Image 1 (tube, protein in one colour):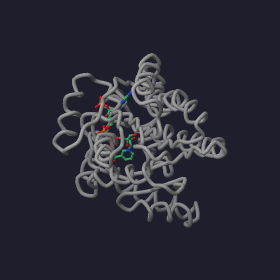
Image 2: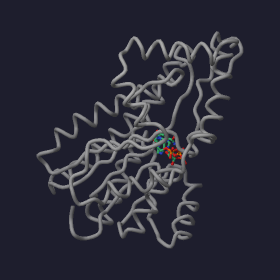
Image 3: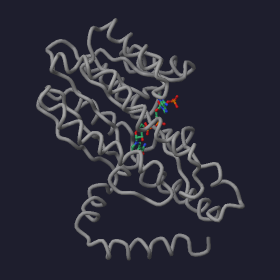
Length: 288
Ligand SMILES: NC(=O)c1ccc[n+]([C@@H]2O[C@H](COP(=O)([O-])OP(=O)(O)OC[C@H]3O[C@@H](n4cnc5c(N)ncnc54)[C@H](OP(=O)(O)O)[C@@H]3O)[C@@H](O)[C@H]2O)c1
């Protein structure tokens, strides 16, 4: 990393982890460009930064829009000359049992969480490669390591991101570019509220999964309320990884019970794990 302030581009910086990371990094002296897709959320980003005693610059960036990616990355390079750190944070979750999810909905999930991220990364990498320095931080999820029912689209997109990141980390090692995965568990952000995606058919009473979807929605809401943590924890982790001088690890996992869940998945034999899962699912959906 260079000795001058880091130039950082954060995608999905209009709420949740992205906004917290953008503000946290600006407070640490970084030159932050906050990618915001909806113009009506720009003011909120500036107000939040100003309330925290700092400032960020916003760039218009919907990661599914190739022209906006080119324009946003071009604008950052024109203004700051380089991008030292890219935080690929933009994402959302498409819930629903697989049979209820249309191809179009599945593609929409991948367009943001995977192809959008890949396109932004591809636009930023040439500069990092030429300078032989840079860091790409991909916000994955515990769902990218362990899949849950009714989250196949989201999990598939995050598993794909995990594979992309592992490969890219090795490809870019010799160019001095770090690729890092951050894998949060459940945190209270808008991903569970205004940005929550549902397969349309999951809300259709004629779907054979309707009752289970309804039950699951209640369970998830309760779970987020009960165990969901403060997103500031992830914002802080992103800031730490973005600014550390030593080489970051490949993965940073954080959140309620995530280490225990990973250890159970790893060490409990498959048959035993599935027997436990079957018992839990039977109990949850007994009368659904
Ligand atoms: N919260 C959790 O429990 C949790 C756990 C594991 C992983 N994650 C991951 O963390 C990341 C951030 O999510 P969050 O929890 O902070 O949720 P959030 O508050 O809903 O933030 C998501 C951000 O992504 C933006 N976004 C969505 N689609 C976009 C697109 N096509 N182009 C550009 N921006 C887009 C949203 O913009 P708008 O404001 O315009 O909607 C928003 O700024 C996501 O990748 C998510 O998968 C979250």
